[in-house]
Length: 433
Image (tube, rainbow, N blue to C red; front, side, top):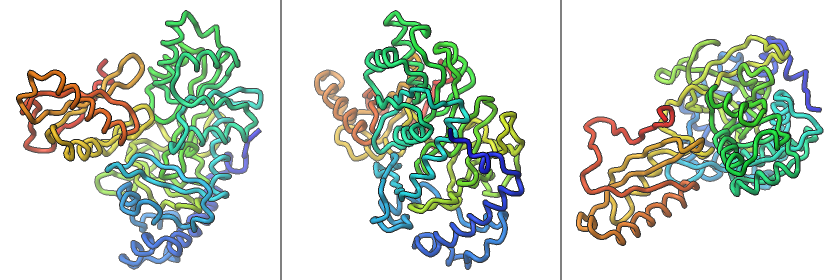
């Protein structure tokens, strides 16, 4: 059983002492091995030896998603490729993915961190976990897979899709844990209902949910429909993937594995640091990452941190559910989507104009995305076949870049609203349905 009492129940003073030692080491490592960081430091006259306290981290410039995009694919790697044994990626803002690499040591730490949050949520050696995350470049499937195995849990790597088969295996194999996005697992409950099945036909007792946030009401729905304890975990590809933080059985915030990840809260407008209990943007620094160290990475996620010890006995800093974002990124079915990605695709396509609007709704428990775009040739109004062909062309192009299927609706020229200021590209109706 994974219960790292030394790391999860440290006193605040001991944790900060460990964090400072690791911060000094990772800063020096990044400076000496990543040209990007050396250049950033040298531009402002900052040297690794200037970091003498945790507060000194504020001297370090922020790292952003654009920095990863601009250094695509491997320029931010600190380790030579011969030591990188795994690559993962998430969608980028221009179709180029954000690429990260892991050394063997990184994978061991990642597995340990995921295993901790699984045990904190109540995972046990005699469980059977069914993973309904997609496998591949997305970090969710593999991240949870290896963490579950480290705990000693039997893993059923179903991947995503084929819902009726998912339910058949869940029932026949007696799965006790389900791992996936909350929206998809809620959708599975609808499919089960249509098949004449109820929660009593399954043995599920625990849900490990990530890839997208979920509200308290959605959690209650999950728990009611499946008869489970629904827990949330948090991570992002740029930092490591899942395993940054996760809820315990108390469900009062996600415990951050802060011996590996140093969290800060900043004012997103000024960049100034904020205190525990104050709402702001999460900034994370990897303290042990060899493959691609991240110094002060701006997650764009809005949350609150608390350092109060939890009722479960763990003393790690906890983060609240993500309350929003400081950018226009959407998280749909666990996939990050930026309106700018859609814009880049449409601008280069023949037959459609640059004006578009993204409408996000709930269809049952699943996110439904519709992209409305103007066709250029007004004569197509009466040519149904040509419109359908153009619509399918746009849809296929979007799917190839975004990696998820979205609905496309072609509208007549000059029918979408024009904006004199910042264009309102996204209409998110998920909370209004």
